[in-house]
Length: 282
Ligand code: 2AM
Ligand code: CA
Ligand code: CA
Ligand code: CA
Image 1 (cartoon, rainbow, N blue to C red):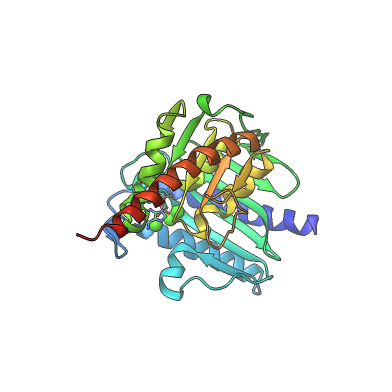
Image 2: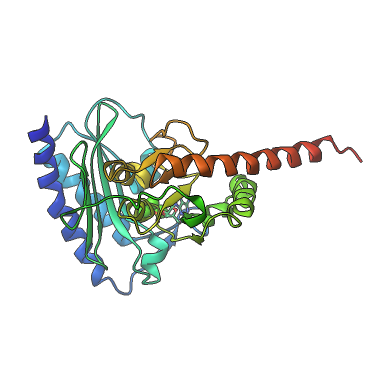
């Protein structure tokens, strides 16, 4: 099994790197929206995903795929026990369009519903994050570890605040923000879910949280955080679910528990406010 996963890894890695290099010279392309004004897509998102799927399918015709752009057409299928590649051809499309160099290509492989490998490449910084389950996580070939932080008061915390644009997430995000801004050392919002996770893995960030995402936003990155010694749970402190990805990824379990204490207070306040509103009959 190990040799087989290594074979998958060795096949896909150059495809990801070549696709990444193409982004470096991208100019004069159209930007479309996919239903919401903030949900952007370019020819590069589509081309990269198509290429990865085509090449892997040629080599392993039985493999399955869950990709952001093909899901627009086919929907997100159920995750089976078959080897399934989960692809975000460009994560941080908004950053890419504005030449903000926090953007990457992300691919993860899930077998028997277990995350087995993750490859993430940011061509603009020439940073390659990789992990194979049980073998650690690497940045450009060098073993990575999280910061190991255990004190929320010293944490640099990344929170994907732009998700609060979705009306169903607005209150949740605002209450959490209100409580956490007074607690953590620093707040960031990078606009790239996958690199947010990778930066927890390499210790640039201490924690990263996001709700309302999709499998491709989390597949490779969550494995990379775990292989770097980090702790990942869902946004309520329960087990992370790849097919309904909301998560808190932290340098340590101790840090994660500290976040959960604050967030439970925020949630309580939010629910009380909602109940009070509902009870008010003018
Ligand atoms: P994307 O760039 O692949 O779309 C901030 O926008 C982060 O949230 C990005 O990682 C982005 O991924 C992700 N995201 C997930 N769903 C989104 C949505 N509906 N609109 C914008 N960003 C979304
Ligand atoms: Ca997108
Ligand atoms: Ca994404
Ligand atoms: Ca994307």
